[in-house]
Length: 209
Image (tube, rainbow, N blue to C red; front, side, top):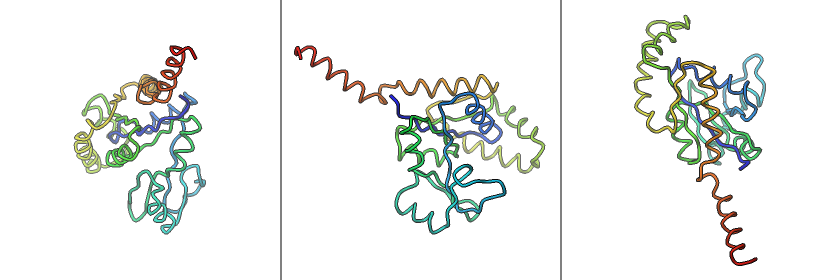
């Protein structure tokens, strides 16, 4: 009952994943954000173990060879991955671990750890998604078009997720996300040890022990 759940959050660019997760962490004490390991250099203000675990390329490749990463990917000549040991330690401490990654990575995690809970975040409509991207004021029309094309591709993978979160109103979406995760703890498949224990106790009573 006390072991945490690994929760992977994915979603369209502009759907508000980052804001949603930040608010979840502020509002509830049950969660830990997964800290990734990377080969890129620390930026000003970044601290080891807080933003990332910083490793050399050789160290990262050794982690791959030893199967110490739940998933990993390479972006712009740098590796990024999810360290198995850190996640396992948080789960064992009873924390639900939140990991934000894209669809391909999420499905890799689910393959390695079938108990992982997959949540997909979307805006209420494609029109709203486009408006949110435009509302940022930081991206060119060409980049917005690329993000929408990417969203169209990502939409094909939504059916592989466990739950869909429609981020229309932030506080409501945060509460729904929290409720889904907490309810997941009581799924029968996650409580087999408890079920087996109570069955054995009942059998002992019937036998008069």
